[in-house]
Image (cartoon, rainbow, N blue to C red; front, side, top):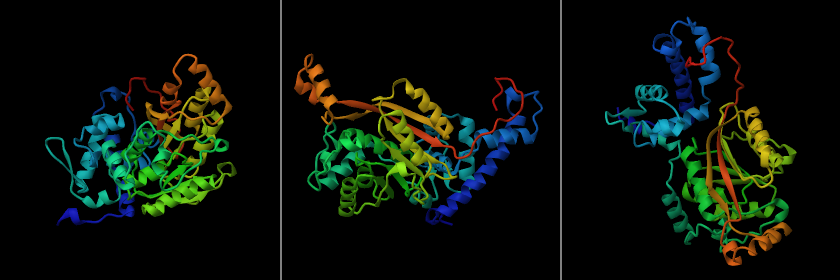
Length: 383
């Protein structure tokens, strides 16, 4: 049988996940009882070990697909470890299981070859920064200028007015490309990715560089939605738009697999935007991207850390120094800080330098609450 010609559906992926969870739990119990040096002498029952697995190691469906993606698109199986900050004991079950399922073939060199290529039609391929840039320049017929505002890319198609009342401030073109690169690195399926606000037009950059990805953009700004819709139609992008005010707690009624938000940079703003997006995710989990800078948060980041935990968001990556905002004057305080800085630095230098920087948080959403397993064990016991 030519396995490369076997097609797969999302239903097949779901069945694959269910089989993996059972397989993984079986080996987890076996390994804990038979091979774990740190657990010797503790006399753990299958039930107790199973409870540890169900509460602390069983991953949701979307996270399973993320891990599969790492293997399908890696040059070497051990790249998985750095992607997931993991170890070889976590790697082996995926390799063994996926090979038995005839999804991959593990070669002696460590290279992973996909033998059922039907799965690749469901999981979007990562793109390197250079490839994303090339795709955008080719389709827009424009040269990327990394330090300029991202909205400048679309001026010849439709001008967009930045509005202070919506706290809009576009990131740089280079920053937008970086964010899209990270989305495509982790996005586990090709459809139902949500943008909770998108005045950076990242949905358009994503669509131009990966036309197979389907996304939904919600925003309260009608002009912004009209611009995105115009660009989506012009370039045949799979983007849907919907006018939504997140303060009204509307449920979108869509099966969302992940979202990106670049909210108001206040503690309450971050909570409102992130919670709205999280509430659109379901029992399958999800991947969450948050752009946020310390504009008016300060030590309240401690309260945000608590908020993330309460909402089942596990930080899998935190990236600094890659997202910047070009100089812009929107508020009276912008003019005042320019006056103060210009007493020290040439005004042209100030206007050609970033005004604001942000970090990119990437979370895995755990939909189920973990329960503490009541069993006294030494702190060095790996379980």
